[in-house]
Image (tube, rainbow, N blue to C red):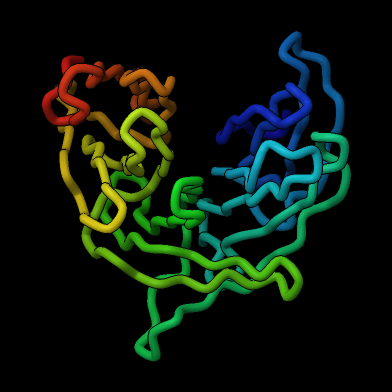
Length: 230
């Protein structure tokens, strides 16, 4: 593939791989066979699916050199559960008149409150975190900032705690919708830079670090990342 950053399973069971600054999305079988490649509409680093339906919308995030600015998000509608059409850039704006950072780096959908969350933290840094409303007809994404200075580069919904997991630098944070940050895990390995995370729904988290480490946290007992073992 032309670059490989984000990774997720499509509804058809294949893998979709984000092609980084090559502006491509790749669909690959779990056995390694190339199925399809489409233009992502922007650079392609992190991704998020609207649902598990065969016609779900795949949102794609730039995250690359120069970032996306007001077009940091693009979207493509799946067909038959897989890639079919090229992505379309979305115009990203803010609800507040004062504006906000539109350089979105991470997305996660909470099915319990039917809400999308976003983060703007760069690699190894802190940034904004809030909710985003998509208009898939007008191709717009409207941001509402909830928190500043949180480590929201990679975002993951955790069905075990029903929280949103945020990650960047050597920090992984646990956000409880309607409450705020309820727990923080700090990596103990020198040079940790947690980029993206994955959970199994049973209280176990895996964190891919840009220094080559794969972090693991078992928080199945206390349901809090900061109280987990690694």
